[in-house]
Image 1: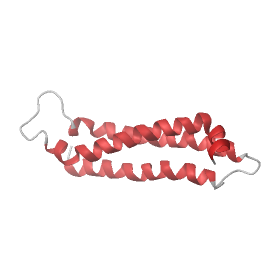
Image 2: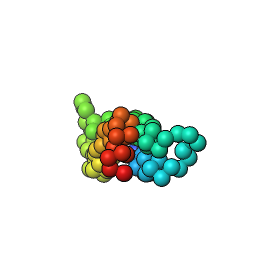
Image 3: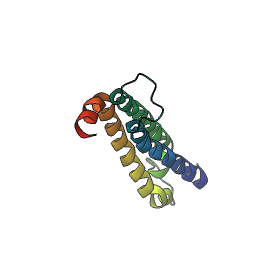
Image 4: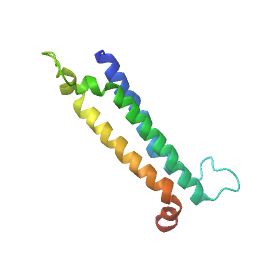
Length: 118
């Protein structure tokens, strides 16, 4: 895999992160809410989209994991991608995991959270 492909994969994750953060916020403000739908339920449903986006982030990162953290026989320059992309990769893995947990909480308990805190 080339350096350019790894960079492109990492960059593709950033819009997904932004969407996963913005979608519940938009749901709170009734953006695109169908008529007759309760706001609490609409916010709760936004959690499923957050989980979907988190899984998509993880899928993208899975494709480059072996290049950034190689196993087995490692050539002399095998750690060049680890040194160059390890920190952004790890940060995106953490953000993806946090978004998956947060999306699951919204998806399961969004109606209660909305009633208590929003």
